[in-house]
Image 1: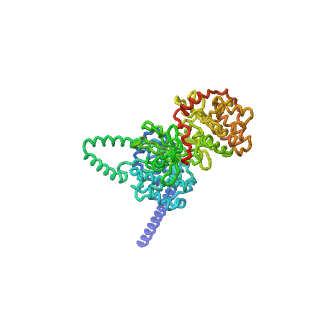
Image 2: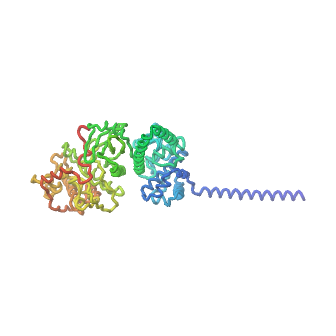
Image 3: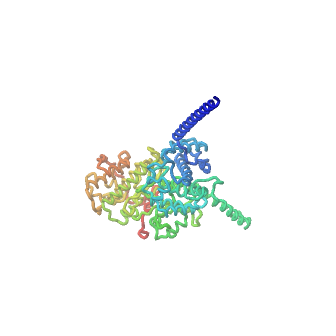
Length: 628
């Protein structure tokens, strides 16, 4: 009996243990299933943001939404550098994107920011992920290497190895290598996303290719102008401060008198450099493609501003043709009579030009400011070189034979450039100085609108009123001259005058039919057009005229644009539709009687100034034959 009882007891224990195992296994399977359905954790290490000084101070207190969003993008790139170095992937998995955005917002909240980055900056959740609309679908280093040659990738790594804010020459070389590679191999990709554009890929790769975290943060600080806490800066700082200390000690030993002079000089230089550095950082944050040149680089490119390289000159200064160290031809606008007080206007001009990119606008490549040159304060802007010069010289100086298709293409190009400034840039940009000498022509005779020195940002729907009228005599809209009212139709008026010059080869102020008194070109042309005598106003040397009704349509558009009453002028997008479609033209309104002045009064006025205020004058961008 005892044995039988033991057997029964052991069997019971076995069954009980087996049931416990089954329950444990079931619970384990349920837990695994539950884990598989939970949201993936974010693989980005946002504790790296503790290193950024600007995130802690400037951004948190800034009321400029564009500036804050730009800094948030730079902060995300900064974190993605380390993620790429560890995983070989540029972007996080799509399933983890939402978690990463939440983690980013939580980190910003811990740093004192009270925002939702996606809603404030219009970022999409997928912009952090491996979305299909990435540049050429590049998501990893391996896929990038299939698009960009290995030797180019190696060159980026080599030129970025010493890049940091302490070594500006290396930083410049690193940025240049990335911009060139992006332009040569990735321009076909999507560059509209504010998080993962083509150039962003190469910038993140350039920083992540460094061997250590210290070097990676140094390169990142170069590429995105980030300021790191002192204990995170690269070891170059110790070397610089050590060398500076030795130099200062040596200078102090030269004597008390020399010491006072050196201190005074150093304070002046340091204040100037600090101010320029602050301005450069602000501009670089809005446009990382902007290249900063030294004055020595500018002088080498222009052969020390040789007269043989002079393209033109005007009220603001001179423009020289230059050849950079890499062989690229450029145009360099050198301002004259520069003082410290004018730097604000200069940086405004650079900000305006560098913020817009369009095939019918002249692109700025970089700039130079040197306050310590022995010859005086220097300011230069570097532009793309336009081999065919400016429209003014072809119409009125060289008498180039331009056929109708060429003039039609030039007219449409000018209008497309203005459509971009008025309709696609937010806030809109009013050029304020549209004229034939500010229209440049590339090698294919495509028009490029130039000289944004007078441009003004204008909130949507706003009319700016000013007591300081800027522009060029003959092109400025009447309401702007008389009342100081400025809106986008002020540019449309100037466009109409310019188009009439293009089609008639008459200057904006010409002689009346009596050949006695100067008259506005629109007032001169209107009686002929009103009576149907279109051929009387066209350039008699224009070949390949084509259908006369098309030419007459374009002249009508020009007269509509240059109408003295604002309400009768079309908007710039309406002008483009009228040019590119068969849309019926608006009824041509009559014009008020023309205003004329005596020839002697006009000559006296013209000799005083061709500009009302602040214009770059007539032929600032026009070529001289000897420089071509």
